[in-house]
Image (tube, rainbow, N blue to C red; front, top):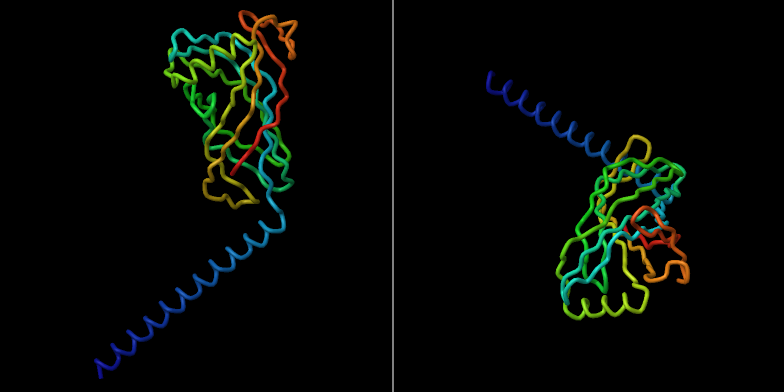
Length: 212
């Protein structure tokens, strides 16, 4: 009799566990389905970035393959979504020339961007005796002699989306901002510069491409 009672209680315990597990799966499915429907209805859009200006303090190819530079850029970001916020968990800014990194990484502090909100960053981007490929070193010298240089200001990092109380996992974000920077006579160049301390500031207002 005792054996039958133990078997009966064991079966009841197994059924209860199966019911609890099934209930958990159903609840998880409902939560996931609700989020996906909400996500589809809201139609999240990527943040919009603009390179506002660049202030050049130093840009010098001291040897065929060594570059020293120091400049400050102003980048703005706009969240076009009505009900979705963006967590910028990490953003690293650097400059590249012909697909080669020519400065160090500059980190931007993590920040939350609310609905329809804007953020503006003005990081310094620099490098001292940064090795560059020989053909890029020659091109940089030639471009500087010609009076202008085209570089790309890049921002790489990770973001999360917030919908109500739900916060998504991390996504990679890649931002590319073309920058055409004149050299030589700051008043006669196509983009007039403004003297700021020991540097020259150029207004660019260049839209950036964003991939998430």
